[in-house]
Image (tube, rainbow, N blue to C red; front, side):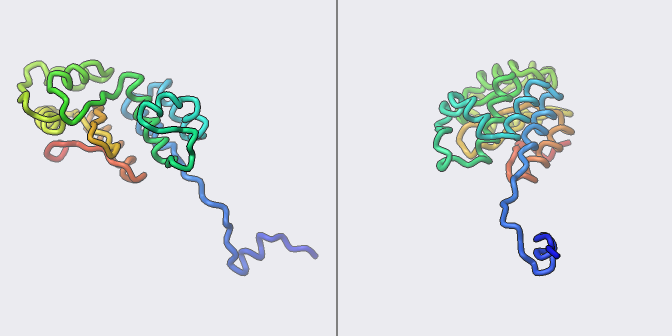
Length: 194
């Protein structure tokens, strides 16, 4: 009688050597919260999560703008391909404003005002007095200290640029936890969220 190999591996502890495939659907989950389920964004990021390399090749020119040569798979980390894909989709669809750490405050306010969910903070920015000497992080910190129920948070890409998104505090708590559980960081620069 022939015994299936699965029984032997259970009896003798032989382990399956197939590497586990990481689930990248968290990028679509984060974007769904930020965009209030914008179907175009979520759909593209589900595509990225399901087949990161095919998505990256389809969007190679966008990655190249960030210095990522998609065809060189050995030099690229698939985790970064997915994280950058999320950032680019959020930016392209009006939910993220990228700025340099030394960006002028006036430009940051303008950039935030172009985001689709600006209404979450609009009433607070009208009378907000910013110090023109502030860098992006200091400005966001001061702005967040005046906001109620919302925040401007920064998606960390291990760079001196800031990828800014606007979110309600409830959404921030959810996306921050999802990011942290997957080895990433979303920064909220203010006293602890109210």
